Length: 284
Ligand code: AMP
Image 1 (tube, rainbow, N blue to C red):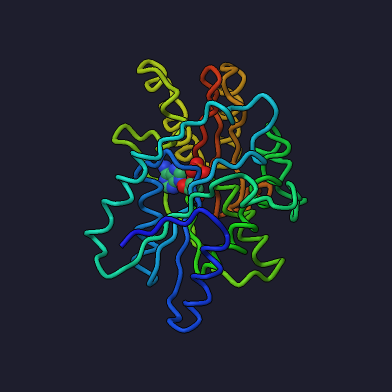
Image 2 (spheres, rainbow, N blue to C red; image 1 turned 90 degrees about the vertical axis):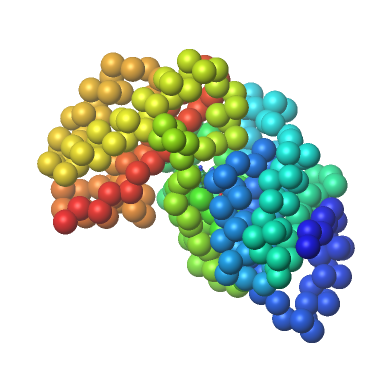
């Protein structure tokens, strides 16, 4: 069964009822224009909980000046169809779609920043998008207050985001478990993304530079960190489309030659579209 909530009040009433039923809630926050990556998060929420909630809200606070807030694809009918396709797979579960009827539902008191990750919000993505992560933590904290999930599901596609959210939850002692799921890719290897819709066919091919380069750096890492860094320098110096290509530890600290748990993260620009991807690497 699918229900659509558009206000906080509907959630308040639902939580009152649920105090009696005590059903567990799994939550997947999204900005819509859903693809298999998003649906996998909701499917996991339904597998592991009594109720799966998916939110669809294009959050203005995480877009910087001049970014694609207005062009961001809003595809409610198609999104609804994709969510409905899970109904038959999980017939005993309830799906709630949280589709706020206005920005005021999420920000009744204005766009207050409630949490800023000092170490991580200014590196990698944060270097190019200085206000982005404050916007993300603000909306996620607020969504957690409204939805009150037991578990929340995020994609490792946004690697830095899920680390920041896990840290926020731990630091603020929020009563939710954060679970990060693997990146869902197209057959070509390209990480699925709502922003892939902006790409022409030719750009989609060019976009594979990102995934292939991450793989090449991963291979170089099996020789040494120094070798990987050499390759990164060659790539970024010869191609100005790179916003960054870096090796970090899995906690996003600076990698050292004896670090074993690593992640290669890249952001590649095609026209106005910034493509994001990463590969985790476990060295022996
Ligand atoms: P977005 O709608 O872009 O804000 O994404 C909502 C959630 O879906 C975030 O947790 C993303 O990391 C996740 N997500 C987006 N693309 C993918 C993907 N290709 N694989 C796995 N998760 C994804």
